[in-house]
Image (cartoon, rainbow, N blue to C red; front, side, top):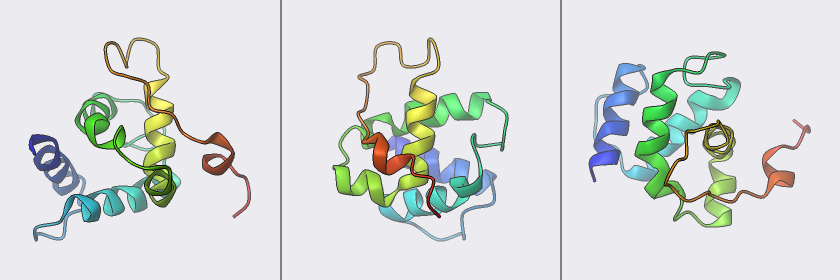
Length: 107
C-alpha cells in the first residue's frame, strides 16, 4: 500500500503521527480530526499537498461504503471539495457523496 505509506509520511510531516504504526483506518481517523476546522490541508489555501493527498487517497475513498464516508466526515468533505476543482480529477472516477449528510449546518 504505497498510498498508505505516503499518507503516513504526510501525517508525520504535519505532526499528526504519534510515531507508531497505524492501520489505514487509524490514519484516516487522524486526518479526519485534523481536517475538522480546515478547508484545505494548510488551512484556507489550496496547495500541492491537497492535490498529492487527493491522488494518494482516491483508490481508498472510491471503495468506502456510505457508512464509512459518513464516519470520516471531514475527510469526505475535503475529498469531495478537492475532486471538483477544475482539472484535478482528470482520468480518475468521480466519487459520489451524499451531500445532505456531509454538508449539514447542525453542530
